[in-house]
Length: 338
Image 1 (cartoon, rainbow, N blue to C red):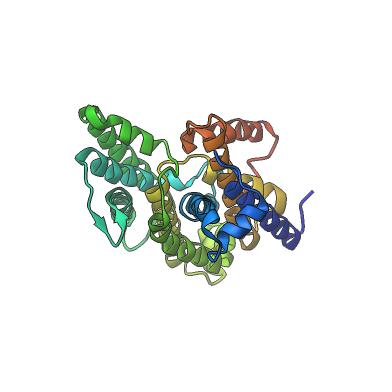
Image 2 (image 1 turned 90 degrees about the vertical axis):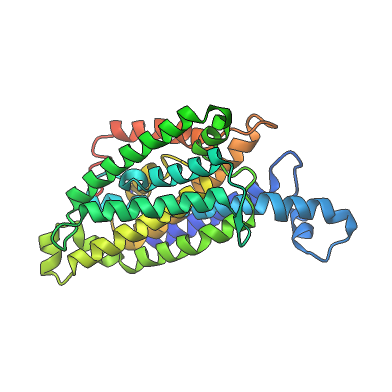
């Protein structure tokens, strides 16, 4: 039974608020609602200095990044599954994540410590690598002024495999600093700050806004490119805009969070089962559900084995993998994407 769109989005919004409070309150030094309220009031006394530092400098940036990355990956996954009309499509399909991984690995193994406007070398290098891979995939896939979806898919897989091989080669030769690269590749928000939020936020907000603005065209593309063209859609322009928006969402997410799997694959499926394939509801629903899922996963990553922290990519895979296998066993669960 599918929920009314407004009810579903309202419920998700309330769950997200609760998850945010949980994320800010939970940690080695637990905080109550009253503590959080006083810490957020910057006019508190000196006795609140520690709580203010915990809330503003440690937990709020992590929660903000979890919301941004989760919503970005959830939206990108929903867009690509609709665009490719393939239930197995996910944000990493275009090779953007491999480009980001290559850029970050180079920065980590080379020991780059420079900063630009407060932004560290690793996220900037990851973003640059992601944008380079997007450009490369686009150049390879564009044929005669058109962007065939099948060719785009093949180009993304080919570029992704090649760049992943380069990452593996760098990790093999950089054994002295291998642990830094491996930890980044497993994903997580450890030691992230407001500068990372500032790097990610514009790409995610603009990317989601663009995807929502083109939701109607994406709905029409579900019926096939020829049918969409007959209904007045500029198919090539729509594909280009949606692919670039999804790729930028993925690039920004990977640049600040590393490789965090299953969010863009599982979340759109769950939302689609609850509200149907209409992207005018599916996209904002996937953004909210992705934010909830990743915020909760981040809390689990830093509390289950505290004081040790589990890489976030492991938590999302452990949570998303079995659930996706369950979806695979449900008759027709993955056939309802169109």
